[in-house]
Length: 235
Length: 235
DNA sequence: TCTTGTGAATAGATTCACAGCT
DNA sequence: AGCTGTGAATCTATTCACAAGA
Image (cartoon, rainbow over all chains, first blue to last red; front, side, top):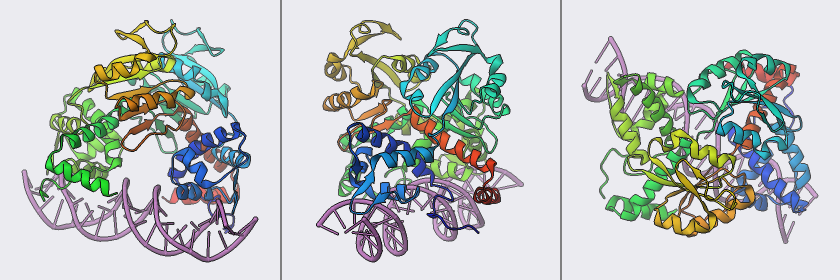
């Protein structure tokens, strides 16, 4: 029952689409800054570096916010995507681990900008505890559970060494956190219902290395690789 | 012609598979450290947090490196994956932009560990140029082209402010670079044949916020959302 | 006339389930 | 008896191509 609405708003937006919404949002913000009032799917797709049919299908999952023959109203679309992503409220984020990376994250401007607010910083190292960063004192990891509850933290960023990441995850999950952004190079074990996203420098470098190697192989031109190249060029 | 070999080794490994190989490699290294000699697809899959059929299919793209009834030899598989990813050679990496993030990246241990070597650091800020980091002097961005060529850099990490990223990308591409890891929050415009991977904190946070919002919506229990929850629990 | 929104077609990834080998 | 490797089935995502609407 209650099966009306734009068909998509009601039930899940595809993951692949959700992953691209931030990209569109950024492109739209760029256009807005340059004073553009209206944009076609084609132009927005170019700005975001995707195919325009994909962009239109993605946006169609949020609703029907364009005007045929005209395009999309930039401000209106910014608002709709922001709302869909939950950026119209602001989320209290805690960063655990104030090493080089943690500091970089805390200082990262775009972080605080829209929708997110660094509400706590934690470290286990007592020589770092007490230091101030972006106006926040670094607190001792012992305070983790208390602070998460009292400051209504909803997203935790783990920027600890690898060995500390799982215990930290266990503790924040026990404190009710269900959204974790993990920078430590380990696979976190978490119960169902907890979302973990992982950012991993070495993984990204390895993927680049793979492709770089392929390119090098092609240039050195073994017969098999030459054939691959020919096939690749057909595309 | 020459259409033999394990059917997969010759022609492209799926992107989704390539993206997971680093994950398997890490899980395998963990097992190796604990002295495990042999592992089944099931156990390795658990360690890597994926489905075992997927793991087997992924590995089958590299070749037939398991033993039926037994599993995979840990050391041998580490070697095969490393070779496939191109980690048996080492890649000279340059980091452009030595702010908080650039420093964190330069100091990141796992970076240097296997396959990668920080071979140059660049910044436009003359007050940073000359400073030493991980044994390397920070060089002025003017040296970019020369250094890329003379030190045989093959991967460039862009950790500059957003506005500097595209010009830097243009310059490194003009110097022959075809692999870029971009931390700046912009879509880089690059010609065909250049691989760009993007790591983006705010994108990741926005994706988490989306899911977090969904969870919150469910708990507040509108009829439609309650229905969604019921459906989700069927799975 | 121009551009959206979307069915239909295609491509790609995941999962199932079991034959085949050790 | 146990586990890999893989066809077949399924699910998800992308792209095409055009009807419908401004």
